[in-house]
Amino acid sequence: MKQYPTVDLGLCNECMGCVEVAPNIFRYNKLIGFVEVVDMDDYPQKDVDEAIKNCPQDCISWERICR
Image (cartoon, rainbow, N blue to C red; front, side, top):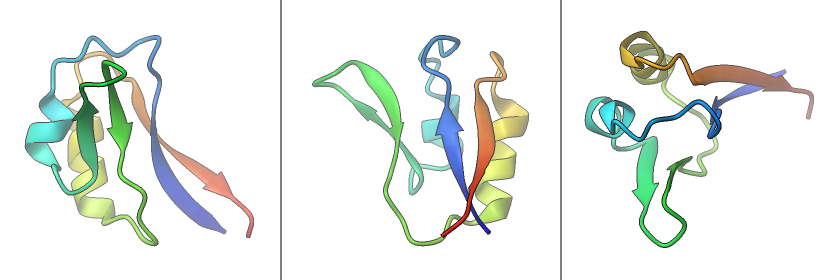
């Protein structure tokens, strides 16, 4: 089972904390005006967990999928 980070855009206030903590995983897309997750094969758990811990809106979480 693979896991990947997601951002609930309905809760996100675009504080950019996740981008500061883990710029290799999260980025701000100026074109659409939202934070997005960079497409990667594997996500460093430590970096994602740090972004989750520091998110004031609790809008970042791990999702699991079967592949």
